[in-house]
Image (cartoon, rainbow, N blue to C red; front, top):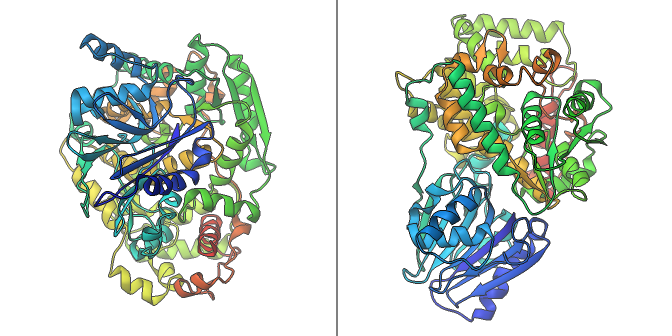
Length: 615
């Protein structure tokens, strides 16, 4: 796992100057790759690389080039690199290292753009094709690894993180707030791909590759993987054969992700997803895998006892890391590594967990993605209830919401009943697609208008992030696709991509830890999106197929634990202190009322936004 950066100019310039600029970009990424650094330039293009050594520690240095002048700078892990290498060697291709980097490079020379279709892993890379005199960019199917880029008077630049791009004067001088991105953030707590908070910086979408030539002023991504096909296909019936197939895919996904030349750990919560990963890891025979978890003083947020119980059943060593309530002093670090406003309340715990585990491991497995591919979120149950509730007149639902607000008070427990009830009641009169979007909303339209300046609202010209969600729903609106499968697809393309995976990547790499996610093996994702609904939800039970295949391994109290998530208490963080930039964009008189509303998510959003403005 690494940090990559590069520049391509319209006309050749001094290679030393170009190399220096690329190296300066990469220096902002040292946390992503503290083990070594490398640069390459031909006067037109410069690559810089920061390496976190996981595979072939001695020989896998980058940028790497071949005899044909093909050069790569690469971030990620290709889990099936050994199998691809065997195929390439059978075709007569010779290798000079044991690294997965060279496998990607040789695969590109052999298969061209189709190389990405052979890769099982998480990756973002750039390859200079000397023959075509073009730059080839690619990103993994789900978007686990980031790749940002910018065009301008200096040419074209790319980086693993936004702060790398900002070191370039021609990028920074033209950086302006993207009003639509800011509305994304206030509405959802994250920014929808391909936007960033800056108008002149964008993100390459997942499952895409693109060519860029010197002098180009734009990019045309080509999609190489279609999750839509899985959603729109006839559903796979749920039976014993289906369970066996699922179990085999999960076993393979975990086994591949245990490949490393360094120790591998496991992040264990109290939930079923990480428990299932732990069970597969313990059966792998790879050696002792150590689990890590965090504890909180507030009982509703603390899952460490449940994690201990799981580890004890599996005979797996576990380290419990005490974590207090995230303090304001942590916010600047979170913002610095996010590079833009980002407000997942589990950011603090994720950051602290990786910080504590970093001295012990370079690689850790996690259960991220399980809730999306197996429909584990409470919102999927809310979707089912909403099919009946939506027929209630809107005024009646709003009246019930006001009644609840007047007769009850926020509890500030994790995902409290109060919060979920008010959120559900407020969806009265909405259709299913709009209600599914509504479950994710932080600040509603009225609140956004009160919070953001009139200038920003005018700049957005009526933009609404809900439009993207509804467009995605329409993309998979086929006779064979149930609403559950469509909702999972939308969540994978929004919430997973722009929240969960951003959090996982930024706050693990902040401490030079590589987190691997077996549930996001593309073969497993495709299979789960094709499953009929009852394999995922039956009555009040969710993740049915996972619980069924784990039934012999775990007792009922583990199998039936309800979904909790990895949040932390954050209501005390919502203080809008004045800043010069913030006063132009926000209404400093805006205040939250924690006595009348659960402001857990809103307060954290404001704290992160204010900290970003201050930087």
